[in-house]
Image (tube, rainbow, N blue to C red; front, side, top):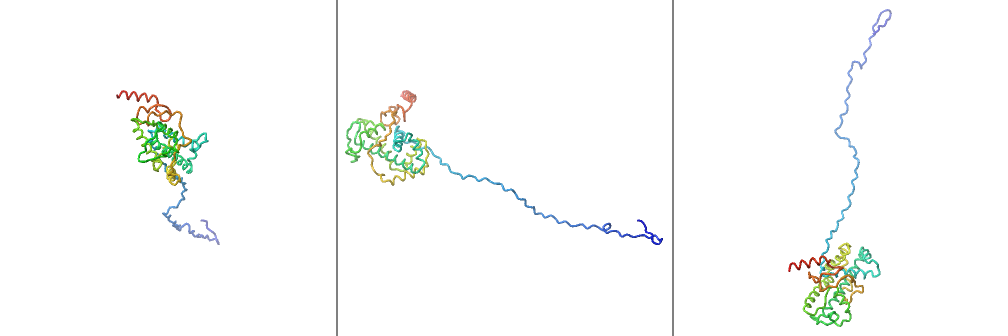
Length: 287
């Protein structure tokens, strides 16, 4: 440090040290970080909403309990379509469109049942009159169906005979034929007056044309026929739109039941020639 000279006497200038050179620098206490984590917003992930599960109705194919009558279902199917749409070029297409509404289902069930009713009463009249031999048969238990034949037409009786293969036997086969006719009448009666049987029969007809209709809608239609004014009315005449395919062959004796003399022909219900030959060979071998 340089000295100052005053009055020729050297003087030493004492300089105070600055505080910062000697003093201790206080340490500032920093705030202790808290342990609470800072919440970081998580981006929202959009979860797709699952579509409501609609139960699928599993439909088991209806078993055909009328298989012993080869042309029965085909006849009902064709007659009903022609009666519903007599002027249509493609009545099947019109029917499928109609069955998409409850009104269309109701109309279809009504026509089916009315057709079965006419078949039932015409067939019942043949218990007392043989349309082949044109001879009367004494009624049993005083049962009469149009006893004076004012409403039942001979031609309609013959149509029924042809459809189911009845021959009008008067010999040893008459009792057999009568029993089978009684069996058929019982089946038709159940279709007319048992709701569950009618439902199954309608489903069987729809199954043949590959149309699926909700069973609840079919049941509604079948339940409602009991409210019709003509529910208990009798009908003695077949539909003017009676359907018979020209390719159907004459049934030789009532309905099949496994009898070989029923096999043959072409068209609905027929068995191929090759299968006929195989069956005949097997039967001959067994004998």
